[in-house]
Every structure is written in structure tokens, then in C-alpha cells.
Length: 274
Length: 256
Image 1 (cartoon, chains in turn yellow, cyan):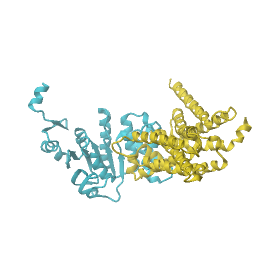
Image 2 (cartoon, chains in turn orange, red):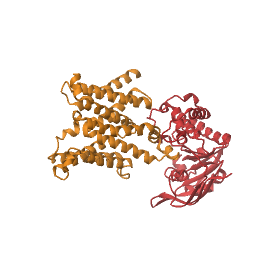
Image 3 (tube, chains in turn green, yellow):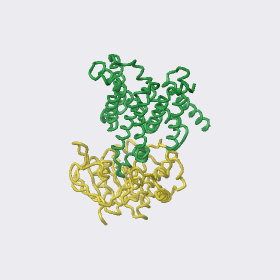
Image 4 (tube, chains in turn yellow, orange):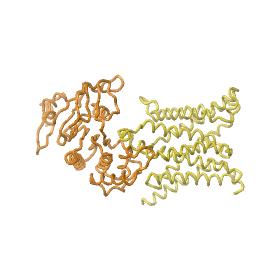
């Protein structure tokens, strides 16, 4: 079993990096109630990949089929910018705007990939291809995740304040719009890169479930971050280790383990309360 | 006493829409001003002008170079689902002094504890903010405003949704901060009867109109009737001024 896992060790490291980065950002996603922004950005990212594959299939940019990340980044960061700046404030409620983005991006992704001769099966968008992560891919993941994590470590206080009480932060001279935008852009960056390998389902899982587990287990911000990171890494490790020898799809295996952690946390909390 | 904020010929609004115009007033050091009016009348617009988050469409808003706000937001502007201890919330009031990317130190913690003692809830320092009562939450937010060592304390609807006991305690605390510490205070509220018995001056914002003066000047039947557009009576009970809308004969009959 260990030998089988070691064959895919770069893929395992990649899954751990994705789990780490998404679980940290996921705490803000869940606490700020912007879970569906995460889902919409993941769909935008998949639409970006599909667009790259479609263009490649049309013969406009053949190199895109092997490196669709550029398109995915542009589309996802544009979405992050849009949502970070308030997302079409006005008559349309914010969550409706998110829903429109989600639906249109998902449909566009499927349509584009259906007509992309260089494309892969569209379920790749849902499940990803974690086992396909190479050493170079992992280095790309690290090159994005490490700076993002450092930004969030150094400016934790700022991100927390503008998330908790933006009006007071503003009166103390904080550039609230800037910090919100930075949060959304780092979120978009991580989602865009993680989507290449993990797929919508696993990225969305890492953004939501570890943070929820953390909220169920502890009652401090530091505790939530710690439990979210630990549960994401453990879920990645256990899910990955089970999927390889038993020939199971890796992404869903990790998600099931994440779900089990959240369920255990919920049961434990309910027992403590009673 | 110098003026901390001065409005000169100010017109406030959003885009092309004017909310209030012809605003000419000052907030001197040591003032205790109630910014009062019904919801949607423009109190928040004036407040945003004072805080500098809304630029005037016309005129100028001058602030003292040493002005430092202590802001107590409406309670529903704060997200209580964040699992934060009272002490951590109070320390946020020093975040701008601490600087970007730096963590609060022992001195910030000591000042936060002192601010909690000042508002009478030092024993709640390690409790979760979300677990506190409305009055305790408000005291926490006042402590957070004080820990930044402001020279102008602004409270936005500080008693909104509170019961009589909590309301009286919070208003008493604010008055004590003004009288004992000499703090300049602006208290925003829709409840004229509540505020009029604590503040020294009132800025009344009603139906696009704005009038500012001492409590005696504003709490007169002629001024209030003109501002609200209906006849009102101002009575006194145990030293408390009370404003009531005057009943017409038809209404009296109907209620009787």
C-alpha cells in the first residue's frame, strides 16, 4: 500500500498544499458567509480552463491545452475583482449575482468543453485529476500557496478586523475596500490554481468543510484555523491513502473523509451540549 | 475650546441626490451632542460626513488635525458569529496604533483591560462577545472605542433594541464619560425623548431639515412642531423632558 502511495507522492504533496491553502481561506469564506462566492469562483475557474481548451481545439493557441492555467487565472481573478468590489451593487441582491455567475460559468464550461477537440471529459471539472499532479505542478502550487499563506499570516489582524466590523475599521483609517479586494484576489488565485488539479468539488470541499469542522470543535479564531488546517491535511492524507490501493476516485475519497470529520465534530459538539 | 469638526455651507448626498443642504455648524471640544431624527432622515449621512467617509457635494468639512474618533457602531453592524473574546475585541481599538502586520503587545492588553474596567466589565474579559447581553456588548464596543484614546466619541444608536434598564445604564455611562473624563460625545439616535435628557445640544434631522441648538432651544413646542410638521407638546416629568404629539379632537374621540 505504501509503495502504491509513494508512486504518487507528488500528487499527495499537491493535495496537501491545496488542502492547506483552501482551508485557511475557507475560514474567511465560511465566517463571512460567502460560501457561494467560493463556488462561483471555482466554476469561473473551470470555465476558464474550458475556454483555453476550446481555443486550443480551434487551433488558435495550441499550447493552451497543456497549460490552461493562464486563462483560468484571468477569468477567476476577474470574478474575484468583481465580487471583491461589491459585485453589481444595486437592484439585484448580491447572492443573486453570485447565482447567475455560478450557473452561467458552469454551463459555459460544459458547452465549451463539449466542443473542444483537445478537451478532456467534462467530469474532470467536477472530480479533478489529483493523481496527475507532477513535481512541476506541485512547485507551481507551492509558488502560489506560500505567498498567499504568508500574506494571510502577516495581515491576519487586518483581514479579521475588516471581516468582523468594517465600519469601525474604516473609522480607524483602514482601507476596507483594499483589504476586501486582497482577500478576494488571494481566494481567486488559490482557487484558480487548485482547480487545475483538484476540480470544483474538491476545491469547494476544502473551502467549506474544514472550516465548518473547526467552528464545531473550537470557539476561538486560532482554534478554528488550527482545526481547519489539521482536518484538511488529515482528510487529504487519509482520503488519498485509501483511494490509491482501493482504486477509488481520489477527490471524492478526500471529500468523504472531510465529511466524516465534520459529522464527528457535530456529534461530539451535540454530546457535549447535552 | 477649539472646534473639532466644522461644517461650512455643506450639502450632503449621494450622486446627484441631495439629502441635506445648508449645513453650518461646529462641534467644539467638550460638546455632548445628540444627532436625532427618524430613520431615513439623514442622520447616518451627517455622521458619515463627520467621519470623513462621505465627501460633501458642496462646502467644506474641516476637522481638527489632532482629531481622533472613537466609534461605537450600531450593534447589528458587528458580526457576533466570529468567536472572539471580549478582550480581543477591545484590543481592535488599538489596531491602527499597532500598525500593519504587527500583533498587539502587553501594553495594548493592559490598556484594553483598563478600558474594560472603565466601563465596568473587566470580569467579562475572557468571555465570548457573542455570549453577552445587549448592554454588555455595547459596553464592550464603548471600551473598544475608548482604548484608542479618542478625543471625539461617536455612538450610533447605542440603545437600539435595549430594554429600559440597559438603556438607562448605557446612557448613564456615556454621560459619565462626558462629565468625568471631559469626553466630547456625539450620540446618534432616533429616540428624541431618550437622548434629550442626557445631551447638552441637539442636532435635529427631520424631513430634509436640519436644526442645531441647545436642548432648551430645540426642545420647544414651536421648534419641534415646525420640524416635525405636526403640533407637539413638550412636558416635564420629574425633571425629564418628554415630547408627545398633540392629539387632535378626532383622535381623542377615537381613542376614547
